[in-house]
Image 1 (spheres, rainbow, N blue to C red):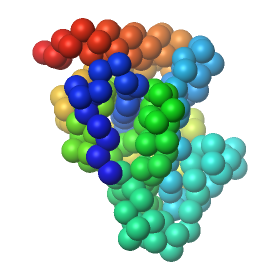
Image 2 (tube, one colour):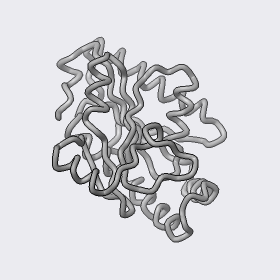
Image 3 (cartoon, rainbow, N blue to C red):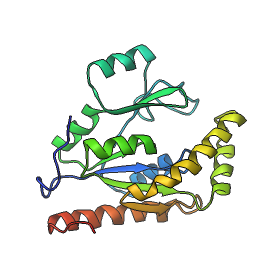
Length: 206
């Protein structure tokens, strides 16, 4: 599926892609956006990774078996999909198209690899890259999360340093301070407001 260009559908809802390294606070930012009253459809990602204790199927992720996931690949049900740390992750087309038909703004949370793929299928989406104030800060967040073995944390930190090199492909870069999520959420809302006004006036992003 190719989502219609916003240049061709002025006034239509936005697709906002939020990405960034593992542990940077993508979920927390989206949750804060919801608490702040921002109205959007949050796209739930499908994955084959095991469900963590505090997670709920259909809310945090669609937790699928590898067989189910591969069947959906064969049936062309994903906008993008990839293997990350040995598990499949993917964005279902229906999650995006159904919301857009209802006139809802859409937020998609993906890793950098996924964002790169979505650049090709939804080129007029707004791409936001969240970063931690420093690698040391990100490392501390990953360790405090206590959701991965130590060797996985090291892998995620190394991956984060690599992903930082890709931030120029994003339209906006926002520093996410873990003690000030409200500021991060407000900055995302400001981006959405700016993009809606820009597109309504037909102004191209420089």
